[in-house]
Length: 179
Image (tube, rainbow, N blue to C red):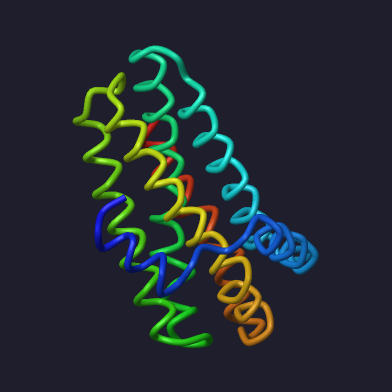
């Protein structure tokens, strides 16, 4: 963990497993009738599973393949959120949340790029993967605990219709190209 990461962790400690689980339960309950939100939560679960897969992979080839699958899923998810969700977050929930979300996505993409250039059998690769997983876990918690519930509560029916119509389209646009 870098010096800056240690400072950030001291100032804003990561959510506990219990807090993350409670936020997930609440957002899943809110997702009934909100197709865009159901998709986001399912993608969060897939991303978490892909991190576990990458960490459990034994050899360099398996680690690279797992990282490739993770990067494709994370990037497709991030692109859809950036194109459709965060502009509405900016309007309905707060510019600060949206700005933070865009920045966190950008940093995750940078860190994934660094991982792709590292030796997957090295200790540094495993440490970097753990760092990225921790950051993504905290980002997912922020979304599920406050940002996404705020959208359900504060977004107009027209805004929700836009979310439903466009989120899948943006996600599949990237995922279709990445296959």
